[in-house]
Amino acid sequence: MTHPPEPPEVDYPLTTKEGWAAFVNEIPAPPLMLPPAVLQRLTETERTDHDTAREDYHAQLVIVSTPTIRHVAATGRKRILLNRHQHSARRGLIVSGPAGTGKTTAITQLGKNYEQLTRGRGALPPRALPVLYVTVPPAATPKMLAIEFARFIGLPLPSRFSQVEVTNRVCDLVCTLGCRLVLIDELHNLDIHSRIGAEASDQIKYLSERIPATFVLAGVDIEGTGLFAGRRGGQIASRYSLIPTSAFRHKTPQEQAAWQALVATLENALRLHAHSPGALLRLAPYLHDRTAGMIGSLSHLVREAALDAILDGTEKITRTGLEAVDLDESAEQQNLPRARQRRTREARRTA
Image 1 (cartoon, one colour):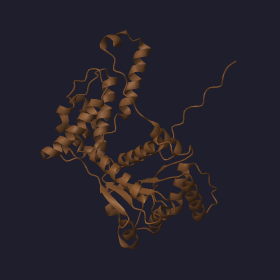
Image 2 (cartoon, rainbow, N blue to C red; image 1 turned 60 degrees about the vertical axis):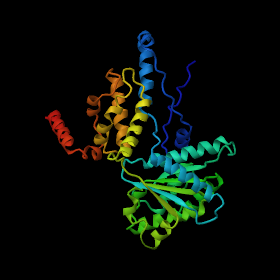
Image 3 (cartoon, rainbow, N blue to C red; image 1 turned 90 degrees about the vertical axis):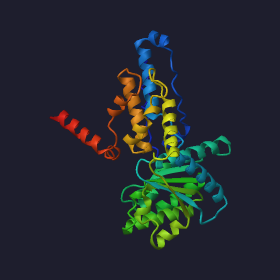
Image 4 (cartoon, rainbow, N blue to C red; image 1 turned 180 degrees about the vertical axis):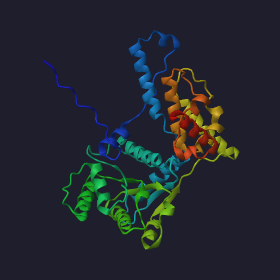
């Protein structure tokens, strides 16, 4: 008798309750580093399994506790406590800065830590959703925003429902599920200068009044979008604290030490058999020049170089290996000579 194949595992996005639950429950454990003698005795299958586990690990690597993450975590936790007994005019946070400066990581880590702490106390019913995470879709309307909330909690809604009906259903269920922290990402997708964008901004304010939770918003350079301007903006500015994010600077000894600590944390997390401790730290000035101090670019650079080191068998990160990694265009353009060299190489490849 043959058994039917097991259904494939679904990789739910973070903007669903299933994807968020997987993120909250995920506790990455570093793979066991085997001594050389043990490595040599591994069969081909065992070695493949060992390398695959390290590839998966380096694809994620460690979440570095940057000053931004610590600031958002501490401030967000206090906002949740302050809002616990507020019936209106609850205070929130807005995390704003250039792309690649760790905004999404900061707010999702806040949500993950809060939910782990809350569930660890054993006071939540099984179906409770203490944290809700959504992203603002491009050209968002008020109804689209409410639908994003419904999608996260898995609330089916007839397409004929009006904006008011969708919003009411969402607010009622979110309140029933005990949500206490709402994370809204990609806030820059709101076009505040358009009528629909302004109405979508009003929808966020309305949702924050209906849902007894702390709202934490994040987006790229929110200060320049007009979100705080005019009568609407004044209401938002009076209730939200702004936490700016930026690239790591590298001029003063204190700034250099902070960057070195960041690099050292990433290096200590590596699981490469031939990597010499301190080799990456000695490249800290180069890494800052290469990434322009962007935490997102640095994480990408180190993770991809680590994967290359496993795949090509060198088992170590070197400057040559780092140079072979193509970064995001924003980081590459910070170093124009290198950008020109890269374009020349690409032209030769395609010639």
